[in-house]
Length: 325
Image (cartoon, rainbow, N blue to C red; front, top):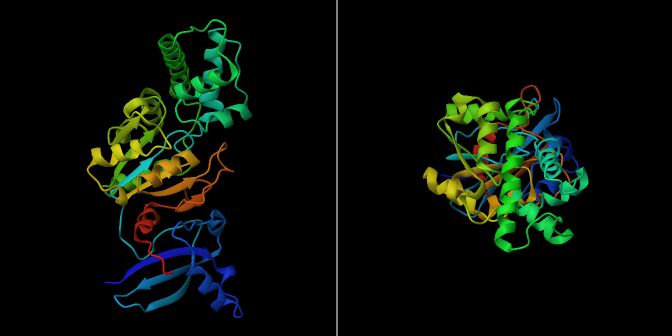
């Protein structure tokens, strides 16, 4: 059976009578890290699906089909589903960083009279370091430890752990009050996956209690009991290391190559790809300008109708991609 793939692109870029053939040829040479630009799915625009099929011989057949889509990317001719849909938490489920974690860190620093405040821009730089404890340690190592911090290595580890515990308590209070909403389309995509029997998990560098609070309070107990959480120190090396995604695949009993990850950051993307998984980026406030060259698709958000950007069928279509060089 011939393998096939669907790449959705703007019809305006290839349907001109004088440019169709050259544009088609250039598409066939694109690398297998092809990104699907979010602008291709904005509004009630005509979207062209370029269907590439490879038979058992070396012959390549190309057909161009034009159809009408409404704000979405989906696989119209494929029933393939991922074995698992794996979500990052912060920036993916909820845009928590600027007005959630950062605020909780600063409140903790103030309570402990450390004389430290992380402003919006500084925290954006610190997010390049995976994990809150690791983030604080790197910051203090670079700028100097507070005067009331301990001096021995083990005492400093304990000090950081105590700061992080208090920060997590303050953050969870924000979540329990539902002051930070789910991002558009998150609940929809999770419901689609659960209804189809697809494993759903959240894989995060954040503290397990904080992640569990987000899942329980914002997604609700019925969804939460079906979602596996891998978070915090469950693995010794955090993103961009692939350990957390490999642990998720192993625990769920699925092949990494059959998993689709939804991430928002370059370090999360690196972790997913190093694990051998497909990765969709939904850009968040702090990550919009990061390098997502190796992503399988990039969107501003998942989205709910009528502003839906992609669905579960689209996630499954990524597993069937096969490009002709």
